[in-house]
Image (cartoon, rainbow, N blue to C red; front, top):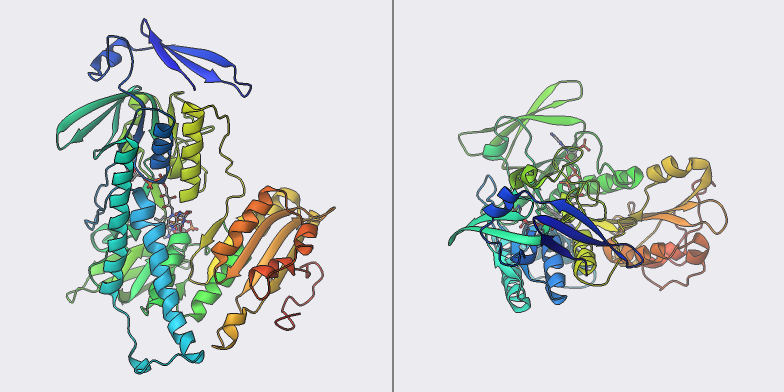
Length: 531
Ligand code: FAD
Ligand code: NA7
């Protein structure tokens, strides 16, 4: 267990190296600051808590629970500032309230809409097939019901594990004190360690009407009214997913793209996804920027935008959803009082093994600079950190080869390097790119569009061809890519993939059947279902 103690206003912090030897770093404490911390037990210079976590989302809760499992005394501060539209939610952070979970449920609703159509071709009879409709209110209520049950379970779990949950905003007063105001009044919390796990919130563009009339992912899953004809501004992960499920539910959906679709992802795969969405009826406004949102007398929203040639256009929508990225919530923490530095865009924290420039203050999750903004990343990093701080572990978080999936609704799952990133790192001549289109068996009878079911394996050219990246567009891509992510961690090669016997008839087996390289110029289309 790492140790911290204070003697004669000098803080000694034990840091264990990888061999388990403990070295002590020391630092003189500003007496004035320390004395201002009323919560400090001055008789023995100890702190009220072993760990205070600011932010009760994926990363913060995982660290808090693991730390209490290891015997630490932990408090978690969590507070949700309402969105500009007034949306607010309970304990658990972005993922369970306004992220992964409600998104996946709405994605599932969209998939079921397609399944209803497929079902008829498989012989299911719907007496009034022409009049099947979808109720936004019923979906929203079901989703919100589930979210609230998760909030409740999370609170019970914290109580059972004896993690103190404080529903208040945490702000640093000094490097060892966080202040919060709750319904019971002001509190000052002192701790040996602090964990910043405040995540982020959606950005809005600086244009007239954006904040007044627009919504974000913070609002869509609890929207009181049907979204109707929707403009989604932003063609990243969240923009594509929201437009995808809205179209799947039957709404008119348009995506405004500033530069490219899914920047940072493999661009060939991104184009295939965009083509698939377009075939499903999603409209794209390429290389356009919003200029203003104006509310009309009938309540509809008139959006004006410009294209790359500075030509101006406008259209009227029922809903305008901004998905232009997220802002880390560090400004509100008064980090300067703790001495914690921010990096890059001035909002995120650049931490080495989750440790900030202030040794006893750590950070996990979306607040970290240049790390994937994904729930399992935050959870895993938080858990490993708690084990290093309060257990015997020396295991650090590995941020490489983290798999992810865009639920678009035909899913795009990937792990490892994109073709562009691999080319930049190794050079095109040193790579072998395997690719292929395939035909999911379940698509045949309903005659669903198979033209975008595509996969790609990015590998080194030499030897057994180490796999650097795997990309898959098709049903259940998330489920498929997860297992291959473990294989990549174990240094998967193309030789091993080709020697793996597939499960037939599945679509995951397509990865074991790869044989066409881009270099060969051969047709990547399949000859038959069982070739
Ligand atoms: P959060 O979960 O955001 O938790 C931070 C908490 O801290 C919040 O409750 C916040 O209100 C609170 N807080 C902030 N400041 C303070 C303060 N000063 N004092 C007290 N409390 C504070 N990831 C996936 O892996 N898969 C997905 O499918 C996926 N889909 C997503 C879909 C959407 C629409 C969005 C928005 C995100 C999605 N993500 C997904 C990302 C995922 O939700 C985040 O990566 C994850 O929630 C980050 O966890 P975190 O602990 O860093 O922060
Ligand atoms: P992303 O992935 O950063 O995408 C943001 C999108 O919004 C992207 O297409 C941007 O275009 C676009 N953008 C950014 N600023 C603007 C402005 N001012 N106007 C119009 N369009 C803009 O963020 P997401 O919110 O989708 O996802 C964040 C993470 O959440 C994601 O990684 C998941 O892990 C969960 P650009 O490409 O920059 O030109």
